[in-house]
Each structure stands twice: as structure tokens, then as C-alpha cells.
Length: 177
Image (cartoon, rainbow, N blue to C red; front, side, top):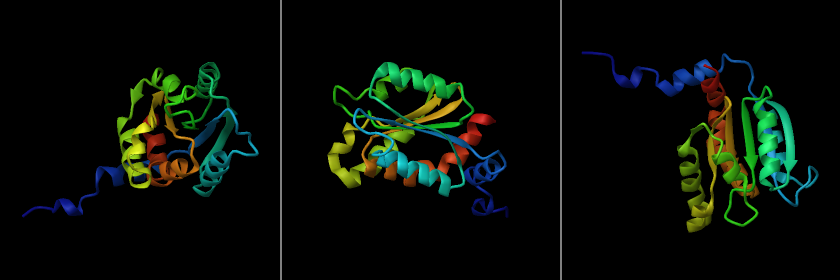
């Protein structure tokens, strides 16, 4: 009768194949914290290691205080650079000092609501109802993919392993096509 749909490549497979043809994605890591330094930043150390293991390029790394003006200046600086993906961690909670989400969400030109939704869904199995406190978010700003996760090491690892790593090359390809 006809070709079974099971035998046709999925759009995801096709896009992943095409994503392999672009230059190696350049990634920036930003830890937002009032207390961490490059020496004590476990999240930054983890992400830098994973980026290298994945064969990606770590183009920039910063630790910035949880201050709206500082976060905004750094975002603008990185948006003018040659990175394709900017990974923020920290400052996405509900406390008075958590301002990463507020700065980023006000600037995102396109949002990826599925990232935050999936992150909270996955987090629920680990932290229960407290997952709803996360304001993890993602989107596009000046042609760069922006991803923001909570600052706990478990949250950063969960986001990297389950959501970011499997799609990072695909994300970089999508914003360049």
C-alpha cells in the first residue's frame, strides 16, 4: 500500500542530522550568585566540563552578582559576541535577590515555554511540589539562545542532562538557519 510512517525519518532526526553540519556551537556559561566565586562555582565547573566532553566550545564564562543591572549588562555583552547559546544558572527562584528571570524574561524576543514546563515536570519527581517555585526559562535574544536554570547543582545537572545536552546543537542550528 504505501510507505509506513515508521520508516520515514522524523523531523527531529532530520534536524539533528542538519545540525551536525554547522560549525561547533560556541557556549557561554553565566553563574548568577552573590556568594560564589570561580573557585567555588560547582555549577560553572560542571557545565564547563560537560561542554568540553560534548565537543562544544566554551567561549565565555562569568560569575555575576544577582543584580539586575549587572545581569543585563552581561547579557548585552554576550549577545554582541559570537556565542550561540548562553546558559545562566542561579537567580530564578522567588527570593527578593532572585532577579535573573526578571531581567531575561523582559528581553526575550521569542520564548520557549516548553523548557520551563519540562524542567518543572522533571524537577517534580526530585523535589515534589517545590518544583513550582522555579522560574526556569528559555528563549531567544538578539539571535542567541538563552537558557536559565535554578542555581542548585542538582537542578543544573538535571537541566543539562535531560534537556540542554540532547538538543544544544539543534538549538544552535535553529537560530542560524
